[in-house]
Amino acid sequence: MKKLMTMTRQFRDDENGAAMVEYSILIGIIATASILVIIGIGIWVSDSFTTLCDNLQGVAGVADCAPAAAAGG
Image (cartoon, rainbow, N blue to C red; front, side, top):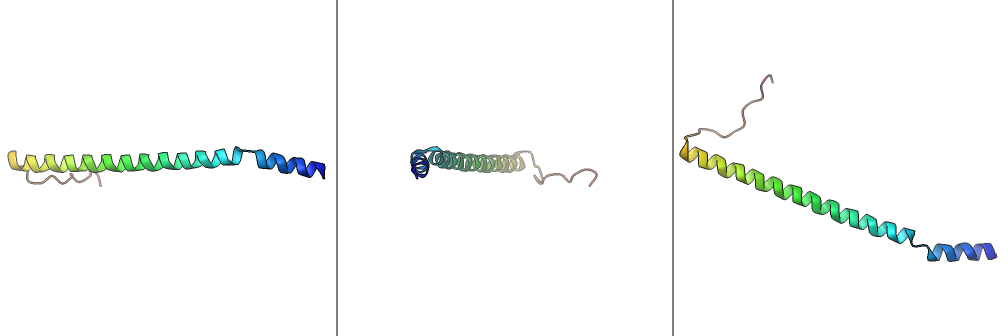
């Protein structure tokens, strides 16, 4: 019976599980923030190229800014 009580106290006082949950939440927050930053940068780059294409069409007379077809495809 004493061994069972000792194991129960150790389980109650063990903080490894709580620390693991906290680290898991932290990793989730960091991963979500990283994904949002990458998406934001992608949107910014896409808008920049669209603006550049529009400016080139007005100045240099570029007919189409669509990507060229892949060679050998």
